[in-house]
Image (cartoon, rainbow, N blue to C red):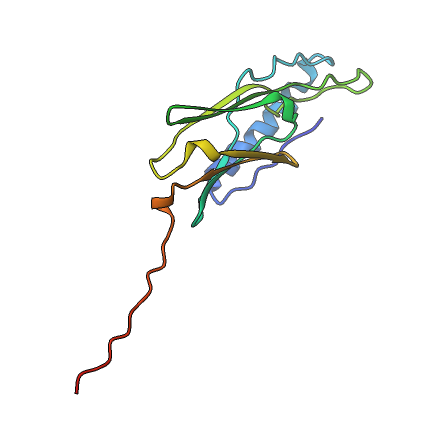
Length: 155
């Protein structure tokens, strides 16, 4: 049997985790050998990083296991929507399944675009489970360098 050991800095949480493990050992003889596993999650929310750079803003979503063709990036008015589906890979029946913890199913994240973003030049790339959406800024929002005129000192 697989167990998950969680160590925290809170002694009460550690005590509850040890109690959970002990109760599991006590109840083990009453369990069936073929554990029933519930259906996987039908929705999940991929975590994102949002970074502002001088010329662009970037949203990077972590979507491992999702094929690029199962991802959709849409812009409607000032809303950017990332959506798609992570399909569960069917496991062969050669091993006994003990636990499902990975999320599967449809996902959707919607972001309101700030006025500083140019909605026309948005680009999306996908590599190694990361979807990166690059949002170019409008010209007026990009940093500008102002030249300084040197005036001779008066004597």
